[in-house]
Length: 128
Image (cartoon, rainbow, N blue to C red; front, side, top):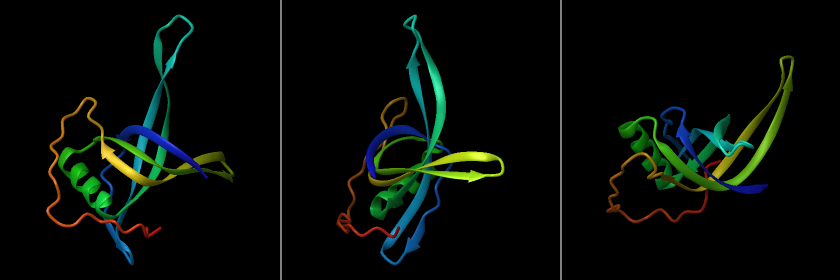
């Protein structure tokens, strides 16, 4: 597995779930890279969807932020793998990330940060 850090927009508000090891969610994040052309101008590249698994307090905070802010821009880092699925309609790629870190990007949006009053979740066990 590889490691990746990317920034993109949530495709929709993720749903918070509860597992044996605590809360978790799966967030779909859409990333479009800017590609420099030979004349020096830039254009938007193809959109890539990442399925990002988030657990613990980070999952709760992500869902809360998305419910409040809607289609927010996030930055995520974690272990990364690509799986290819082949079917009758051709093949497709699934980009999966198990997030170690996820946060709200400050580019193009404003956020309010508030320190948690409860103890920070240091449980390294993820429900997935």
